[in-house]
Length: 402
Image (tube, rainbow, N blue to C red; front, side, top):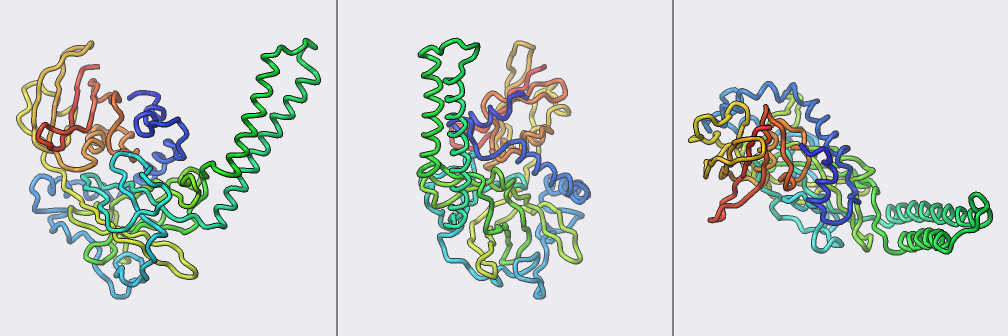
């Protein structure tokens, strides 16, 4: 894979400068750590999950798919696994909202507006979602964040002015400064002064933290079946304000696995079906929920058939779906194949990468940037989300020898 991954991601996902509020290494590391913790539980269901893909009628251990979901419990505390979502008071609309992140973007057309509830967060093959959480920024949090911003900018300006004064008074080697050198010192002070003015009036605020203690709750037929008490990757990077500093947006990461009850450790991937997503957050001395937003989960279809003789089926696992085309292609290193597979799911390309075993699939963008390739068992594999001529969602592969 390309070694300059962070810059490639920013260039492909955020067409602006490389100033994202999200640290890619921090985000992917957190997701990877959470997956490791749950690996023991999930590993035990792998064989059953294969059965679900192959036959469509069985899930873990031969049970019907929905039987893996936690059962409704009348004694469950509000907001906990198995509880009725109706036990939590519904929040007033406009304070908290979710946006789908189908293209890896964390921006919206009007960043000063909290999105309304009821929208669809996506149709996913994988069992991880990364919606954008948008919330109002309280005056207290805004004032504290602005104070930090102004303090930092003030220190930068003071340092620039001090450096200018010192150099002007005692130039290096006692050689008089040129006009260009004086201009450079002046520009440094002016840039720092402009940064201070922006901090006081217009600069976006980042790193404000989640003052609402937000949690993600996922329900099926009104029962909480999955939850995430820590959906934000890292408080240092997880929030960026709108230009008017009225709302903040944060990219979240939630694994779509069953929550734990007293009699069940959970950790099983949610079966295919329709779900509702809520945001629970602190309000006064209690908690309230915003939502719902809808979410559709799909089963991975069987692996495609009809591949030509000599195709590296064992070396390069392909995403499940219908084979649209496969044709020989030639690269600088030799002969390979171009493959197109029709498969539903907003995250089909991301799942295709995950099947290759590359850690990049933990990144929240749902398709790899153009030009990124992955080394797999002696092959260099490119993966891209695409659309057929008749509008069908597809995944396109380029597979060439290393």
